[in-house]
Length: 73
Image (cartoon, rainbow, N blue to C red; front, side, top):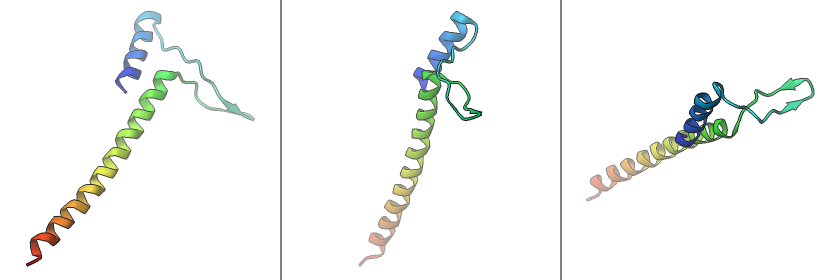
């Protein structure tokens, strides 16, 4: 994510705007143009969300297992 942010910052400082070079369309629908930095930011955000979800699920299982062990004689 940081690499993507730095890439976009570089474009803004050097060119005055972010250079978008990937543009996709299907029929009459055009997906918003983006660049590699945008992709890195998006994938990083998705990765953080997934990591957060999996860690919260793992934490719930660990604390539930800890509770069961405390109650076992």
